[in-house]
Length: 70
Image 1: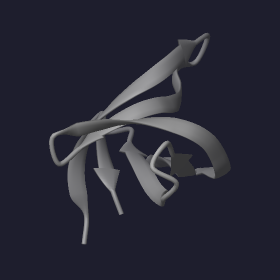
Image 2 (image 1 turned 30 degrees about the horizontal axis):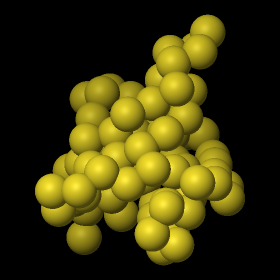
Image 3 (image 1 turned 180 degrees about the vertical axis):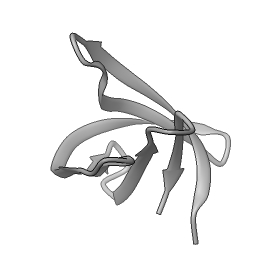
Image 4 (image 1 turned 135 degrees about the horizontal axis):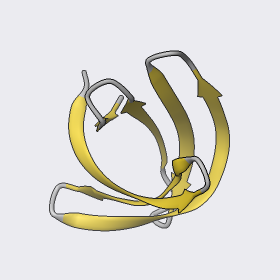
């Protein structure tokens, strides 16, 4: 089930290059590590470990410019 979320990103020369934190259920979690990432024509996906020690899969929909938690 996909869930829309708010993500803050490091914005380098390519725009929103990678997530640095995200808001989930009223709290903001800092991204401690990007474990994996992959790119598609329509999406960028990031498997991250947040400061709470949990792993999350974040997907950036490039066409809608929105983020989802998978």
